[in-house]
Length: 336
Image (tube, rainbow, N blue to C red; front, side, top):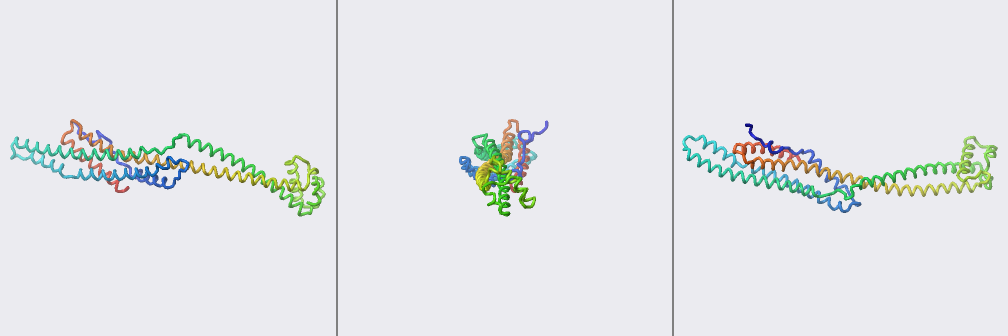
């Protein structure tokens, strides 16, 4: 019959030090950076997360030390050596051997019981601290909050894109009218056409370079289109007034765009904070999962030792496996 091992009762998984260390660092870093002014009910829980995480880490370290000290107690080893010596002693009568072995069994039961109490207490302490950390709910009540904020942000970005397009069009029109006014003033034509702006044919008769002539023609054509009138029905003042109107419209849209941008930045910041909150929750879970490997191993050791058919030899074997496992865990703990 194959001898049983601890693996028959539990999976002796060693916590991943990199996962626990990274999770702890990220949790503290996110909590330090988050403001969560839009989620005050969750904000007040974050210090509790830090405190619970620190407490769980401390208990994990303390209990491992306690269990290890108990395992390194030489009493159990001494009892095993004494049993082998008694069994090999040919000078003892059968009756005396049985009495001696009976006394050893009593001492062994007491020592094993003491070890089980400490292991059980340690497993319970780690499990309780992990559960304390797990029970701190930092997820927003509204499960659709992130989707709602994203929709609002998308809407604001679309609104800003439309504003930017309108501003670009207005800016182009304003630059054209500005250039038209500057060219007319350059050739002293503002006073000449102050009552009625020239037609394209009249402009063609004016002595000015072709590029500037084309610019004025384009500017007046744009003015006609904007006001819905032909140039011989428009005055120079209409050109100036429309240029100023465009400037005012642009400034109004600019102010509106800045307001929308500010609101969008606030929403984007809130979304980023929600992502940070998600990261805290995920890393909290990752840390707990790694710590759980320890208390599950402790419970597994107890289950093996308390198995109805467990023999003294089984216990000795379980103890050796358990010591090896805890040494691996201690090596991990020292690097955290």
